[in-house]
Length: 433
Image (cartoon, rainbow, N blue to C red; front, top):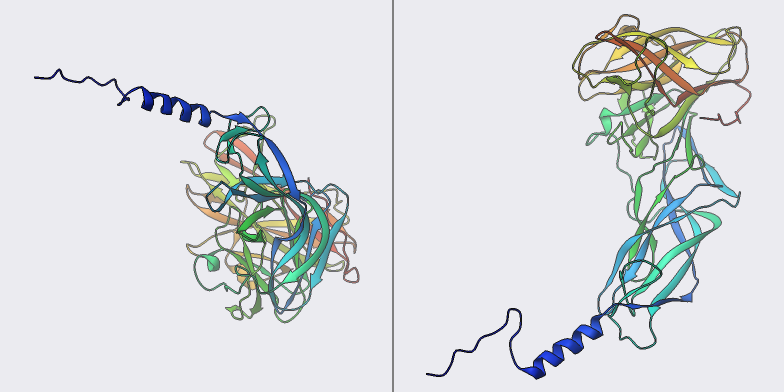
């Protein structure tokens, strides 16, 4: 009987096969490579999803330090193009583009970026060899290509035909649950450090890649309710980052719905002082969002500001004690006369900015002081403001004081309110913290 042939683990065959395996391993060893730029084209990128209703004007701005993270197109040898991470472009040149739309519209705002199209190369290693560029681990391959945005050029255009910006409406999905009524003569403005991703923001030829815009307070949108019975702004997943849809407000019916982009809510910043305890269960909804509302009015009038929601995330009932608007406004100029609270019904979020009195909100709300907010409950905080002098009055933040158990807490929000004279249709933008 011939002797049994023994094989080492992971190896079969004679010396020739062993030599071939060693040669293949050597060829696959990572090498240092260089990145060569082949072209620097200029491409237009979608940075804002823009929607407006018939009854409103929408204003938008992009620039200054309005950073954008734009996907990188990446191609491995012998494979198709894919998205390979993203690159953050800081637009700190001090320039800004913007505009105002006074008609019904569903579109993208697009602006120009300079791109670098290049590939990774090595003088001797074949394409497909893993390589490293700089001190990093070998994450590239010789011959692989990439296309990424490097610099904001400027300019702006409106594109109504790109997929994704089409009409959606507010009467389906979760959008009817998350809405703000903006009465004629009032407005809503949002500035945020986080914005929704726009898929297919730029066409690289072999593929389309996406972009996140809004990583500074210099990307903004504002809806001015100008005509008819005003507008609704409604969203999809409040309180977190959400697209918000703008539509005409016809009575109390949802008709002629038109989408729009905004982020509602407020940043919860928990503070403590004296005998209070900072971190507590009741917070304003909407993390990392800066927004403010306002209206045009004169002395001797009252306004209703109710765009903030508080929720009780704890296991104990919270007693609401006081709420205030925080700003450099004297009581002789304007002041908060009363704060009311309205418990939100399942499936409905009726927020509001408009004149006071308003019978619907008066009948469905109660004074805030002493209100018991049960665990899991959500409520809208309604500030009633009396204007004593005609002028520009700003409250950039709001606060809420409450007791849960034996502790007193205070929570604040970057949600502001502004009063402007009726003849000042270019009311200055309010500075938010």
